Amino acid sequence: MPMMTPTRNLKSTIAAIALLLSISIGGAPCKAQDDEAANTSRFVKEVLKDEYRKTDPPATAPVFRWDFSKADGVSAYSYTQEVSNSTTSALWGNSGPMRQEISGNGVLLVRSQGNGTAEMVLKDMKMSMKIGAGLEGPKTMEQQMPPIAIQGVKEDGSGSCGDSPQYEVFKDLFPLPPQTLMVGESVDVPAQMPFNVSGSVLKVTGHTRITLAQYVDIGGKTCAQFNVDTYISDLKIPPEMEGEYKFSSRDTSVYYFDVASREFISGTIASMTQFSIDAPMPQIDMPGENTSDLPKRAQMSMQSDNLVRVKLQE
Image 1 (tube, helix red, strand yellow):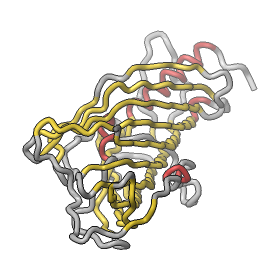
Image 2 (tube, one colour):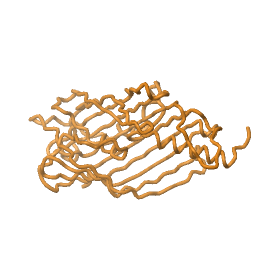
Image 3 (cartoon, helix red, strand yellow):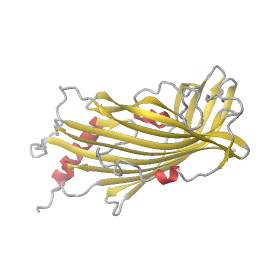
Image 4 (cartoon, one colour):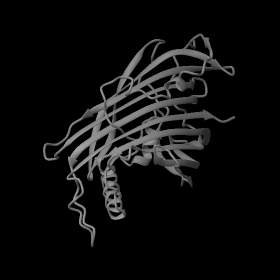
């Protein structure tokens, strides 16, 4: 096989970057598959690791809502995240998938406004990323992330985050059922994620199932244990958009909610998100470069496996 020239490398890299910039989703992506194991995060075992002593339900059915009645009341959580990404593209030939290993930690604040709403702020987030083909001799980058904030979060956990990918970190956090549940009961609520394809923001839909698994004792506090499963895969492509697109996202999480203080104690999320695309290649013009030998179709798949932990700080 002939060696790839530096010019061809440059063109392929620029083409790949252009393709990546034209495709984005909330959270992180990857190739859709029907195999159940391939759709499940390898971090699921971490979600099920914590064990607490089972306790009796409260005598009165609790209100599964935050308490945002006091101004400037703040709940501070440690926030940690691990991400494993893998990207393949026809533009890279047989060089193998590009891999990323990301870890980060920061502080998540839930600050009550005293009017039934709160703002959430993720701050002091330090990220470390290793990137490379096969992670052989990967480059390591360190980054201090700027604070990310959303306002107007309601006591039921709802609030508008918009479709910006940076806000997706908040959407999976702190799930609350829309109604009172008895132990063993579940409720399904709609779920969706934005999928940006060449500037068009498409909606991928599915559902989240919240189950009140049991009540447990955590440090003398009676806490509701919510087992949460989310599956999103319903993607409708307008006929005017040529190509084949596939998407799936599966989350498994466990959260503990203090029914007396009406705040979360902790939560762990394992998430596997995948997509693939086979579509006409976006036109790329590079002065002085002949781009006619670039692939005519954009063929790419991405996979992102995520683990997120939040824990109330003392």
